[in-house]
Length: 419
Image (cartoon, rainbow, N blue to C red; front, side, top):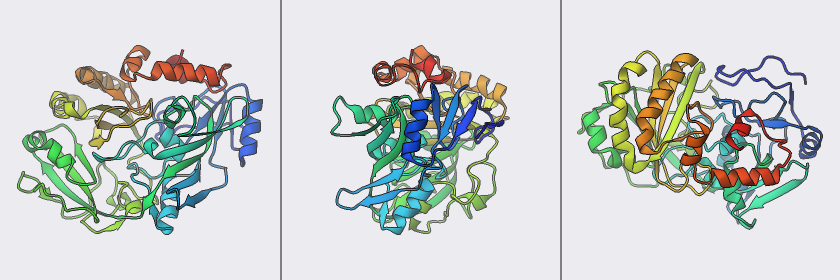
């Protein structure tokens, strides 16, 4: 189909692709790749930068037939790459299985989330890419390769977060476990003193914990505690620390609460509690721009203290900032690779110029804490800084040159990043 004016989900990026192709089979993906000099795989358009943009051809995998094949003996599920986590989660739950974690938005595609290092929350939970045990990928030649733990040269960890540079992923195998239930409770206005003094205890007190703040005097204006019902109850008394229980559902941003997943401590399936937002509603706020940085967990309190003086910058622009924990990962380009991490996530109003200025300030403040920008968010970091932040980026660039010597999968973003 001929491309018309198209944007990413948030509307802050207008795609420059000359065409958008939607193959309906893996064989068709192979033919498209072999016949197209340059192309870029497009996920569910939830990236806020130009990682999925191109002046050539975009390829969406949304037209591939849905596949959800459970191998109970191996505890893995094979899914079509273009499926959303919402669809995969619903299918797994219906079969009595679960993924270990989900992102706050279940609307994102599996392959897109994996490719950019997207994560959920929890001191024991690595990025979503960590669940990947195998990938089917169409190489620049049009040939299909299968990559798993048996593939030599650490290939699986190189492919888990691959930014679209190593080929078009058409299927993914994910580790699964028996289904479980989760109960979400929310507390409001946990004072800064309590956040800073008890940070480690609060964020590790349940399976998944998120703190939302505006960096103003309210401290953590929302604390979302998501407890697996098969695990012990939280032990930190947030009320004793100065917070108060929410008396009804709350939204972390500015949208109607009908779009958030159920709170109030009511147990429900993992698939309907681990995300913040219901798959049947428009996710988050829509007209927004996001930035995120993962820092070593040991720097979290100092980083939060350093960011607080930016309150005047944030006041007119910030919708919400979310603080989450992410376990150390093994993927080369995972933002949490090799280190227990805390994610500092910023959702801004869609004012590109003001956001760019704010992001530059944030990165200056976070510089002493070795921040790694999320691949799918906006950032001011230059190529040299990104290679410092991601120690395996040079190795990844070499692998990309070997697997794609003519630059078939290169766009402007990757050409800058992977010289």
